[in-house]
Image (cartoon, rainbow, N blue to C red; front, side):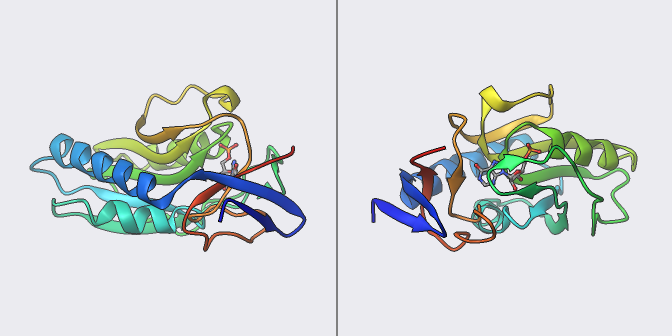
Length: 180
Ligand code: IMP
């Protein structure tokens, strides 16, 4: 399907599942090389990262652990600018090699907050893998952003874990809004 409607909003096809999978395979290869001899802990940021995490982790041939945490800050199609508390951050991350797994980095506010909280627990290292990045929306300098799937324009996207008002996470492909 090339055009879909989620609630009141029109979307068109943007990144097909096949392209997502090909890119994720490459990210996995890169992580396998960079973390050779280590046992990274992947921490997914819910809800949006669950499908990306599932596909990324299947490409990892290293011993590794997986956990999820949650931050709620987004309503509708524009950031509220507010970040709430982190829920479910694993306790014992001191000395661990952490890879945060995000669906999308928009302004970078959420990620900056997450990184601050994680670093307070003294991990050995922290890097971020985000499926999508909107470089022109980025307001924070995040040097830990290492494994990016796709850089995309500053448009609202939905599908493959990403939602519009809670809907559309189940879509296999990623769609972009046809109007603002
Ligand atoms: P940031 O704090 O502005 O970087 O926003 C990050 C969070 O906003 C992501 O984890 C998503 O949950 C949400 N978000 C940002 N852009 C989009 C989008 O285009 N579609 C769906 N969710 C988005």
